[in-house]
Image (cartoon, rainbow, N blue to C red; front, top):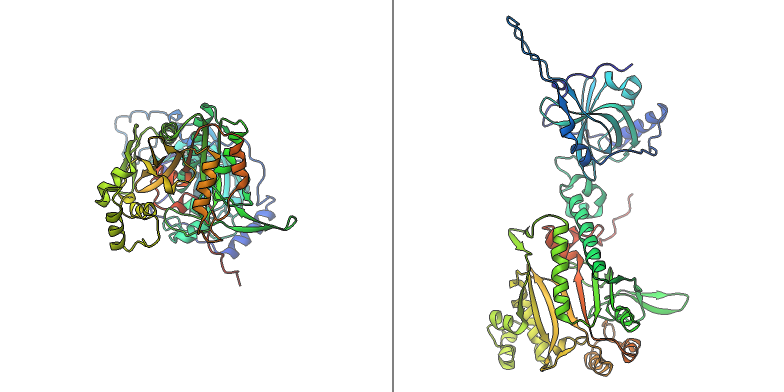
Length: 522
C-alpha cells in the first residue's frame, strides 16, 4: 500500500543538476527490463491527458490550509509546511529533465504546450511502479496521474500517484543545457530541435496559426481553395529554372511547378470568380537566407478586381495573420521593430528609383552609366532590365516597410495589364518588408492577342532550359475564350512567417528544408 505523501518542503530537487547521459547499450538493458516487468515499452492508448499548459492554468485551484499559531513556550525547530489540496490531473510528455535522490525522483516532462515537473516517491507509487521508474531515461515518453501542488520553492508539480510508461527512447538525447548547436544538425534532426531548442515548437505552431488565419480570411471573403497540378508539361507563370522529371508511362518530360498562376487563371475562365491555392512550388535555384528550392506560395485571383483590390486584400491578410499569433501589430524583428498597423505605405517604383539611385527613371543614358559603374551588363540589354537590376541592388534593401511598391516597367511584366494613360507602366505592385519581397500582384492581362505577343517578345533569345522558353499555347487558348478582368496576388508564406516570428533564415520556418544526404552509417 502506498504511503502518505511527503510535505512539499521535502520535495525540491537540487538546482543546476545535469541530466543523465545514458549510453545506448544501457537504454537497451532498460528496454529489456521494462518487458520483464510486464510492461509494453512502446506504450498504448492513453486517454484523458490534458495539455500541460491547461494543467498549469489550474494552479489557482490549489488550496493551502493555514498553519495553526504556535503555542506559548513551544520550542524552536523547522516549521512544518502547510497542507495543500490540488486538483487531480493526468499528463503525458517527453522527459527533458531527470534527477534521482534516494527514494525520490524528479522528472520534467514537455508536451507541445509546455513543461511541468513530476514528483515520484517510492512510498507514493508503490514498489512495482518504483522498479519501472528506475528504467526511465532522458528522452523517454511517460504519463502520470496525480495531484497538482507546489513545492516549497513554489514550483508547480504533479505529485504522482500512478505512473505510466509510454515510449522508450533507445537513442541518447542531447543535454538540455547545451541542446543542438549545429544549425545543419538542427534542420536534419528537426524532431529533436523542436524538443530541445527554445522557441522552435512555438514558431511552427505560429506558422500553423498564420496559415489558418489566411484561409479563414479568404473564406470569409468568398474565395474557394483549389488544388492545381504539381507536374506541368510546360514550366510557366514565372521566370525560374524548374526541376525536370519524366513520366515513364506516357514517355514525356515534365516539370515540377514553379508557380500556380496559369492554372488558376484557367479556372477563372471556367467561372470561378474568387479562387486561390496555397501550396508548394519548386525552383531549381540557389539556397540562402530567403530562398529555398521548395517553398510555399499563396496565389489569389478575383474577377472584376485589379491590383488595388489585391493591395487591400494583402494588407488585411497580413494584419489578421499578425493578430492571430498575438495581440500586437508592432512586432520585433532582428534588432528593430516592424509596425504592421494599416495602412501600409505606398510609393511608386520610379520615385523610389530616383530617390535611391539618384537618377530619374526615364533617363536611359544616366541609367546605363550608373549600371556600368556597378558592373551591371548593359550591352544589348533592354534599359528596363538594366533599371530593374539597379533597383534590386540599390533600392530593395532600403525598403524596411511594410511598403507597397507600385507601377513597374511594363516590359518586365508580361502577364500584367498596362495603365491606360501610360502603356509603358504595368499595374503591378510588390510588397517589401525589411528588404524582402513578400507579395507580388497584378491587374491581370486578359487580352489574348497581347498576351501571345508579349510571350513571343519575352521568349525570343531565351535559352532552351529557361522556364519561359516555351509558350503555353493552351493558356493563350483559354484566354481567347474570355477571362474576366481580374486582380491577382502571390504571397511567399515562408517569408511572411519569418517576419511575423522574428526569424532570420527561411530554413528555420520550413520544417524539413532540403539538405545534402548524410553519409551512410558504417
